Image (cartoon, rainbow, N blue to C red; front, side):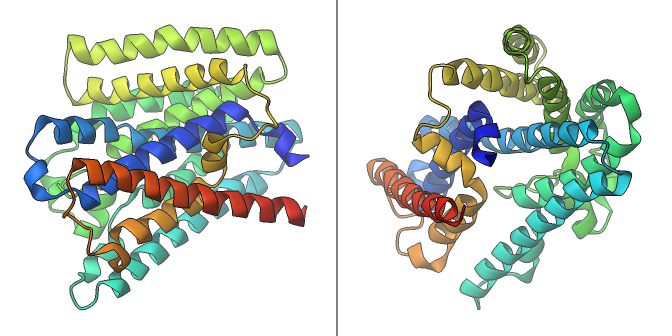
Length: 333
């Protein structure tokens, strides 16, 4: 029964994010330095900048859908809070276990500080905990509060790049602002904006979930809103409009996948949906596979054609792994 209640287009969005993630990580890990100065690599990295926002947006979206269900059955304050806090601590635990594993693999060359790197999983975990507290204290003004918070984060992000914040201890500062040029650093500012916009969208979508006509109208309205936000960065390019343009991209992606999935059987097989359903497992395994010592002979040594071929190989391995995980879950149920 649980599978019937899943929204196909959300699995598709997450699946697309998984594909974009593997695309970016494999090339970042395997492409030789000689090829990194050309425009192709710069565009490749630019596109990859939309991957983490998508994961965060969908995490917030799913939390909004889940919390709306709990509101309907009058769940207690603590049970609501525990929903996101439990999930947040679990994902944080997964993040640290992954970093510890990579640290042990690369001994004696690894740096102990890498264990505490603020990766996308750290951000999602902490953001889920924060959203849980915010959700239970915002009362009936949830959509307005999360929308205003989204706008506030967008405008605060450039302001927070100030000297007194830079002087904070690194293990606190790295969770707040982006002071690192390292690949894959995801502080709360600005990345929390995708969680707040996601949960606001999820709450709205949940209210119309049982009404097909209203759901379609909602997604039709999200399309021009997304376009306006994207165009804002073209009219006045700066940090704030860049953040809002990425929120706009998520709205376009959400509505685009919704209308696309109207033509698919919700219970039919889909590689994209398969990857979306097992995104956390795929993230964990592919990081070990791509950045671990297992593939050290390929790291920063391949040309473009071989790097593209490596993407296909990693994708195939991940799909096979997710397929057997799916079969195992169905067998248990």
